Length: 352
Image 1 (cartoon, one colour):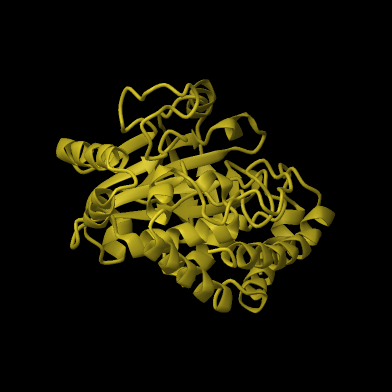
Image 2 (spheres, one colour):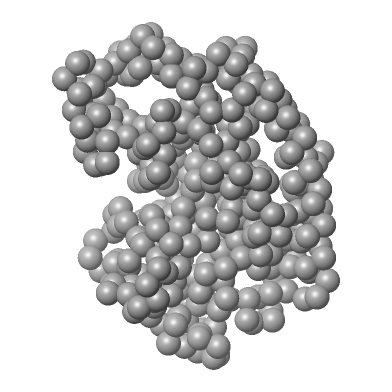
């Protein structure tokens, strides 16, 4: 079955402007054709080191909506993000909707891409969720700590590592105060009161289980969104960028089976799991996952469905990094990862 087709239409001037702005976040004017309908849009490149790749990712704005078109260049299967976003809701965590598409730039086939829903106001409206604020964790300084991840020096701002998307100046002060209080009260009963007052602990532990089970090494200090829930006023996490998962890292290299600690990491996770009752709650969440959605018989049918849906388009993808033979080997690697990861998690939990 053929993938949906998207055609990104760029004039000569826009093409030149887009290349000149490779390392900026400025949009250029273009159009996009979908289902035979052409609409004006704005487009820019997205990502970090991936902007240097021959197959690049895009942000596209159309009719007030933003879509992310991920090249999935480092993933031999091109399904790791999609697989993660299919499994995470089964763990009780909201995740962006996505689907694979065949992308053309003007009349040139660019290959298989993953079209991902933007996490923004519309994301919350579609799910009936009220949100006072939204922040993106865009670097590993979004670690809930006081010190810079690289220099080790005290951060000039506690919001270093975050991109503020909406919510006003008071919401920025509120998140900074949460991080400050977490570190000032660490290890005390006051810390527990502070965390419970400001964080949806159960939702956080479910999000943590998702990052741990899928093996998202880069997902604890960046590559997530945090919002303040409208009804409870507490912070919740949304997963983002799960390409480096299921046995491979974000560069496509096979990672060590125990690379991602079962307790995860970052300063908030450490503070939470220092309390025995929250560690027990986390263990219950992991046990439910191991007995439910994180099993071969649940995951592998999704793997095969996703890979079958993109196989023919993958094979003729002119910019892909990996061979078709390597693509065909990926279900076996993912299956092995599931088996080993289950053993690693169960072994670790025996000592809790």
